[in-house]
Image (tube, rainbow, N blue to C red):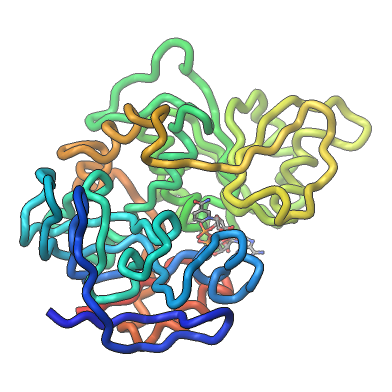
Amino acid sequence: MSNRAAILKSEKVGFEIRDTETGKPGKGEVLVKVHAAAIEPTDAELARYAILYTVMKVKYPTVLGSPIAGIVEALGAGVEKVKVGERVVCGTKIRVHRKAKYGGLQRFTVVDESEIVEARDEVPFTKAVTLASYTPPGALFGATTLNMHRPSIPASPLPDSEQGKKILIWGGSSAMGSISISYAKQAGYTVISTSSRRNFGLLKSLGADHIFDHDDPATVEKVRALFPIDYWHDTLSLFNSLEIIIKILAPEGGTVTKANVLLLDPPGMLGNPTLPEGVTLQMCRFSTHAPENKEWAEWLLSRGGFLEEGIKSGIVKGVPAEVVGGLEKVDEGIAMVNKGVRFIVLCLY
Ligand SMILES: NC(=O)c1ccc[n+]([C@@H]2O[C@H](COP(=O)([O-])OP(=O)(O)OC[C@H]3O[C@@H](n4cnc5c(N)ncnc54)[C@H](OP(=O)(O)O)[C@@H]3O)[C@@H](O)[C@H]2O)c1
């Protein structure tokens, strides 16, 4: 069982692909033979900007990458949720534990038992890995984030207090936005979303009810015509996406509509913009292990839970992955993410 990894030796030096030690799973941990590993924008940012190394307190040499999909190779003490040989998909804990053995861009990685979800035979690893992000369900249904009503399979009607409510998901063609649309629709909400025109078909296939071009100035008034909007989520979290959302909430010379806008990056990265009174920004900080998310974790991550069933049934949907090749393509993959390509997956076997 020899391991091989894309190792980031230090700041901004690029990756070295080499043989390395295979991690040992500790108590409650599982060793997975990685078949597909995703590169997320945060990985690309980590590989590019020295400041993030300081913020994230990355320890070198490190291995980035999350989520992963593959086959269970070995179990740590006390693991009961999965068996050796099972097909699974899972987020990695590299940004929490910060040791190389927890990164995804290697042949064998160590993950937490509690976050593993079975990937059924009918779902290719390269697809499962694009759908397993905890960020969209964390953003929408976490107790301290938007706290919307959680979906079920089969779908059930929204409770009376949520009937007829709408969510604006800005950037529905992004990796996070697309998955968010599928969760919000399954829960029973009306979804208003934006993308460039070329992605309207994608948003329709995800189930969005109202689709607008985020580059069209008329979108501001078109979205306002759908007020009241109950939940606001900027999945792009870019300077110009937030600027347009603020125009929707606070038209020049008009009345400000109070709203809390959930972002996926810290407002500091957008220069801490001045906000009209009544508009607040919230960065989506979400931990699958936080005590307030215990019920959420059971709903999403347990055996037969929403994520397992949602991936298997095709209810959890997202943008298709760009599979760029094996570990040796990691620099190319990071460069593509930096250029705005949505979901990059390395295929390790
Ligand atoms: N907090 C977390 O846990 C977490 C996790 C993952 C991601 N994130 C953050 O969430 C944000 C979205 O990540 P993602 O992976 O979902 O995004 P993504 O998939 O890379 O989104 C790319 C899409 O966004 C649209 N877009 C519009 N304006 C853009 C611009 N100026 N530059 C690039 N793309 C633009 C494009 O679609 P159209 O052609 O349709 O406009 C593009 O295809 C990032 O800021 C990332 O750092 C946070």
